[in-house]
Length: 308
Image (cartoon, rainbow, N blue to C red; front, top):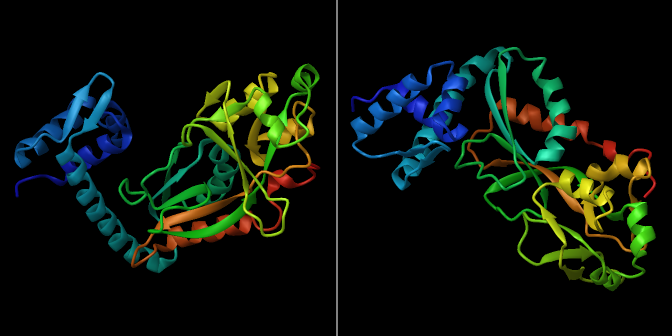
């Protein structure tokens, strides 16, 4: 078919960045050139791939289907090229990673950047988003997941245990008092996380050996989709929250927050590096995973010196 490779690349970039302007910036081209390339591709295929608006682009059903196939083919081409180049033991090409926002900015980023700095031919595209990303469908090499894994199509390697803590500010404790039991939380103002099902469910370890976790449905006064915002609302004295220690470690250490329920233990999460099941895992991805496993071995950095 008389389509051009550059036109397909322009479409893929628009899909992955969410707009033609962002795609043009990433490709180092003008917006009009990228728009023309996508229009040419649509004309050749005789289908509409994207709905365009002032807010960005949204893929049509056929656009999504074409993207998935085209992205898979591009990955195969990348792997074929990298298999040849990696024979000289130097990593190259683009490494695409998806990770949660706070963990990505606070801990993952510095570790990855240190790794990338040793390989001038290796590029990194890191997408930070607290929502679950379709790694295979969106062409990611690697993802970071925190919690209990549900997607059996992914291969997972454990990086660290993530403890959670029930916390509030000293000012809130003075104003509203502290709960003495898990049930006592229902009488307090709470701060919830929106990237879970409606009806905030807080889970605690059983007091009986081998017992099932205890679940508590919380009605939150404030909800947000970001852990740092939850932490800041908690510091401001607006309620009680359950948060990962890696988000609140500094606030606990400097006294901005306190453990509001020290005799109860929220169910811990696990931090994983996950990747799609492929017949061949690129050397660069394997090397990055090994680097992350080594970096987080032993006590996680946010736990060191913390007494909670």
